[in-house]
Amino acid sequence: MTEDRLPNRLTLANSISWCSVPAGGDRMPFDQLHRRAFITLLGGTVAWPLAARAQQPAMPVIGFLSSASPGPFAHLAAAFRQGLQETGYIDGQNLTIEYRWAEGQYDRLPALAADLVRRPVAVIAATGGSLVARAAMAATATIPIVFSSGTDPVRVGLVTRTVGQQIHILYASTERQLDTAFAALNEIRAGALVVGADPFFNSRRDQIAALAARYAIPAIYEGREYAVAGGLMSYGTSVTQGYRQVGLYTAQILKGAKPADLPVFQLTKFEFVINLKTAKALGVKISDNLLSLADEVIE
Image 1 (cartoon, one colour):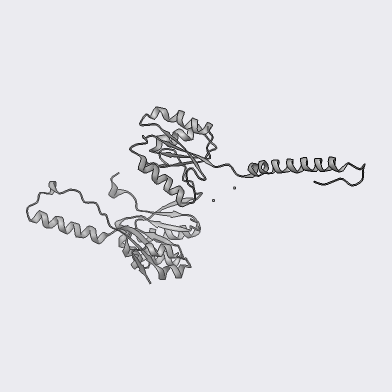
Image 2: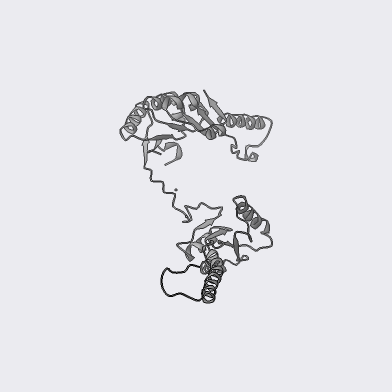
């Protein structure tokens, strides 16, 4: 089935963490009493610092596991220490860092990770890719692991993004089916609505925004035009920028440019629009932080 034949769909998301003398008894010569009191006092003086030292928490030790070499990546290790320092932890003062570098030899990672576990460390910072994190995970199931990776952590099995929400997908390709879809989501008491990007939906944005308001469903859309029509918020590429680029390419072809020589242009401008009037009508509180991120706020 080609993309233009795929059924239009609405994605619905349901309601979207540590020295005394005993009384009585025989009299004791003063010198013996004095000596015993002195010994007791001395014993207490020696034992007190030992007890105090025992009560002091041990300096935490953390492990830094990397697939790289220390020389070329010294600036990244420094950035890691900076992050610790910004929250009050300084290596050598109230923290100890154990570094383990694989120096590009990935087969060394399991042994290096196991070495940190035997140390043992309180936390392992696994840096330099998903293989490092997986080696750390294979070495321990109890020590927390903080990792950095450029790949999708869910896809490679580092984390599960389980949020306990149920997703309902409803389809509509006619005005009547839109009415039916909103009635259905009202019955299942969906907590939020995501409207997919689709030309049919775009042409019915006034109807969709009105239905969302009628059923009091907070919804987010793919284009600014929905928010202007009364939708709660929108986030997506700028359609205006896209049409402008189409005009630019059309003009270049008129001037003699070959279509095959023109690269495919990908939109880079995204717009986040919030309709504050709709939010108030729905009883949805928009935080100041979210408002500060918006490109446009409609009041």
